[in-house]
Length: 568
Image 1: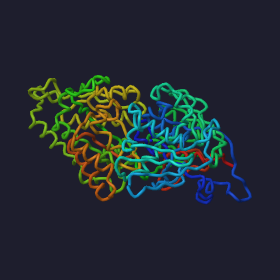
Image 2: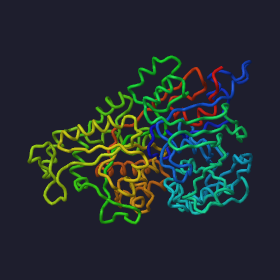
Image 3: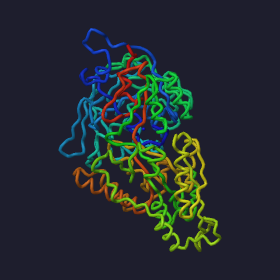
């Protein structure tokens, strides 16, 4: 999922779909005015306007990278299995599922009344087609990794799907939660699924795409024929405001009904604004993280056929340098200044929201500026000319420790965080040349080009650690997916990744996941300053029924948009 970021199919970007079968008392609409069964009917109609900082990068689910794209996929498409706000896996298109005694044969039974937006019935043939398409299209960005252990898919009748896996899997449900079911009759006519623009975006979900202008707005209409209970509103508009001040003004002026991201500095102002409610929440079963990562791509194995440049500063490859940078990174200062305390210290790609899979802060590097200076000094990085920047050590093809540092320009706190980090590393003799880039441009230099030194961005986590753990694997350097943004390749890490993906004993898998996180920490592949809380806000005088639970999955996701309704 939040600011425009690459995403791990983030639930923060709208993963959850509350079932229409939920009892009225449990639904957001029942607690927000207009009690079902009462004397006053819940009002309907209207178009919800949501201000966002970025925009979807692709209408094709196979090509989406940014969290805004996955918000769209979740609203337009259905999946066999969904995730509840508390993190449990629940039925969506599949009414139930089970695994055979061999632990490698999964059977799903589907609803019999789902239809696509064009009126065509959705059957097991569409589910099989979609899974096979993701599995057999390696140039898709994220989704093929969810099907890597699927050997074959069968559709013996219209409402039954049988999936055979090559090995037992302990995270079958989390894989199915991202299998967006596509209409076979439309997609099989495309010449190439990777280049297919999917402009009509026909799905079976609660909303239909009606208009899309990249970097401007996305307009959706409610699917009044939705096979479950249709939304109460007539539609949704996601309006892009790259400037955070403009986004906040749009909310306070009533130009939009909700915003899903804004700087923490605006919290106090919004809290005292009439008819505006601020929502600050944690995220269950995953979460968002800020990460700073290094270009570790080996020039000797650079994927040049796929546009690889592998131009990292030579000193970035020195573990001593990266450890010194880790020791000089004041995470609490970043949290206090950039987020005004609305975050928790980070550690690894597995956030604290994943429970016992999280390694724990005791494994982290401790803040030690003097120790970082001494480590660099001892390794031969001296400042002989007294300009405050250490020179490269003997034998390196470089002049001094001046590194390129890029971040996405739609990251509200990006400029402030980059300045803070530059100041922290300046203390130990490292200089940053900071550049803010459009997310598409940032992706282009990131991977598989590897044409950078240090980069700051973010991830959102699945309810299972498998996907994010797959990012820094060797295969994702060589398969042109652009998924491995660091170029890191470690055979021992890959072996553990394979093992945890098929481990069915929870305790054993937890230990494997912990070992993988420790490897990434030891090799200083990522620095994770913090895990984010969600800062959201909405107007109380236009629409009611927004989902507000112990955790939030975004005001822009189906949890709210199925039930939100005009204020009476």
